[in-house]
Image 1: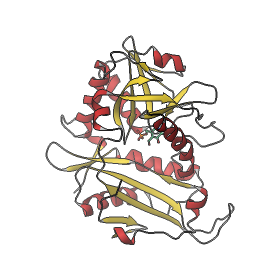
Image 2 (image 1 turned 180 degrees about the horizontal axis):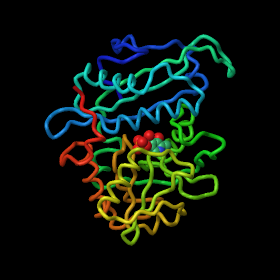
Image 3 (image 1 turned 90 degrees about the vertical axis):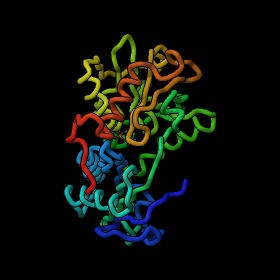
Image 4 (image 1 turned 90 degrees about the horizontal axis):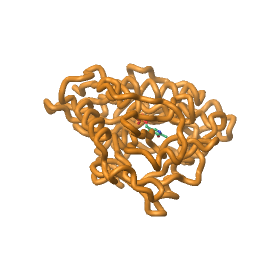
Length: 307
Ligand SMILES: Cc1ncc(COP(=O)(O)O)c(C=O)c1O
């Protein structure tokens, strides 16, 4: 996929797309220590653009950096402003934002500490991550043979660049086998999450999802959907569950900034529910899109207008 964008924010200023380049000795390129985010901006009912949960994403970017022992040379407000500035400079109303904190070139070796900490923010239009068809009717998922990180082998609450090798291998494995998304088990064999999404199951009207205390990323979409579900009086259970619980679910969906709220119609070649998006999934998906697009004025605190 080509990236269509004009201006990139790099180390404090907007530069042309062609000039947003790095040296081959960039430390993060070699060893993976860095922090990144994925954020979406949506066109609102009144035609303006708003970034969804910008504060929460920048907070997580700085927390990931802290976990990764990286001192970011920009503060929270500066980074939020930079996101707004980049979207505005490109004239986007609907787009994806990718802030990335990385270690520049200079010293090599694992012990390097003197390399400049650099920050880039790239924005581009990005449609449904798991496809429009998947968003409507559900995707086919498979449990990958790769285990999700042990909580003391990787820092699972951080979006640390190098940790994504685990997700990419799982995703590639299941896509090669003809599926859309990989579900990963934790080191004890319980369901963890998908390669880039949190996972939810509906059974007998209750919504189950993996707890934050286990090997999952604390998804901001997960938090949004849990909030919306509770506001609608739905029962929420945050508890570990086993692989076979997926097979007997009435409905399954995945959440992520990129994937939004995507129904799952099949897991490991077993049809889930009626084999399409179920009623609770549809209700929450609709509530999600209404919220991010500011349709009913609910949760204005989650929307930062680009102006
Ligand atoms: C491994 C993983 N889990 C879950 C998520 C969902 O997180 P969020 O909803 O904050 O995008 C992501 C995406 O960032 C992810 O990479």
